[in-house]
Length: 462
Image 1 (cartoon, rainbow, N blue to C red):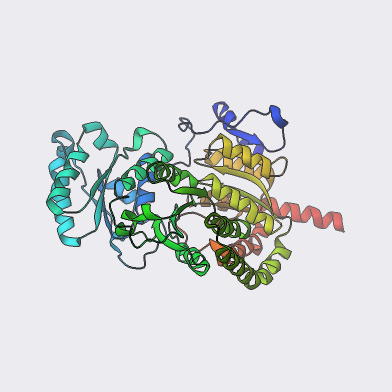
Image 2 (cartoon, helix red, strand yellow):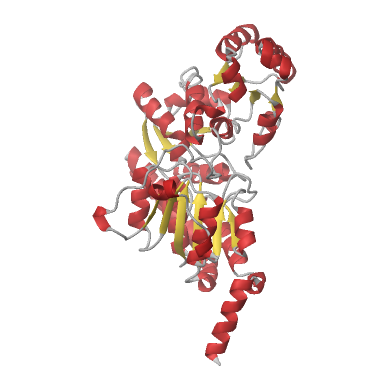
């Protein structure tokens, strides 16, 4: 079956294998627009910006465009809020044919005024969609007018879907957030403080990670954007360090804050034992305070003592099992390769939607020889690679789930829609439990290709 699934010739430059060709192997091509006919797993610019900004809980989020755009992205993250639930609502101007002909600016202004009066948000984000870019509505002018009238920041998001890739949507989101940063009072922000960038509080993960830093004696000023608050974001320029969890979505913001406010940043990850511990140690080292480093070691020691007995139990069953990974950002892919290795599992396929050439080179170096590495893949490619490598587990998002189940492969959801925390030390236990339950389910023994293999092994043994 694997041989019947063909790869489009123009996609070849975005696919490679670890350990082949040595230094002569050309770098993977990345950052390209998705190939026509490829049915890419990527989303559009609008979706990229919306999913980054959406978890700011006390802001109003309104989509200026047809209702389908708002429906497509509504509540697609499992983000949680400790207070306001305003972000759970999906508002849209629902542009119709007459709005397209005569323009939708007046409709947008009426909608903004009405919604701000009803909900009293701290700020409002207005998302441009493809049709708005085509008809030329001036979002910036409307936002400026409403902001002056209502007394809150009303921020346009230049997220017309046709402008590029999902990664361009991340950049548009960062540019909008930058308009808030620097407008608040930093007098009460301590020197030993951080911002968490690119953590979206999926299933409450921000709260888990935040508690580790608080136990170390490090203040968390703002989370951008999980469980985010407008007032915290406005004063986050007073923090001493930015930690960038999702490098694809937030590196641009971190670099701008470094240039504008002199705040250093570190790219880290909160997924997996190694990366979570490294994030705590790197933060402690940055502040050059022995007491903070001692507390970081204490946090890691206590957490590992609590989780390792269960991890070892799962590892006995999972040793030697093969996994395919396809996720949005490269840093999550790095963490998953290491996390699977801590379970004695082999990563045989790994890819991302938004990685760059340097990311794929790092994956080549850290993966075992023969591992397939792919940029901006599509269902046919993913199915082909999973069959070729005879994987036991597929880790991805909602769009990859049907691929896995149709092929008779266990699946682990590591994307926005999940409802269980996978970050932090406790998240590693949750991850191991889910992987174990998926891989070891007896249902896979009845998949035709697995059943025939089991029969052949039984015959050899007899």
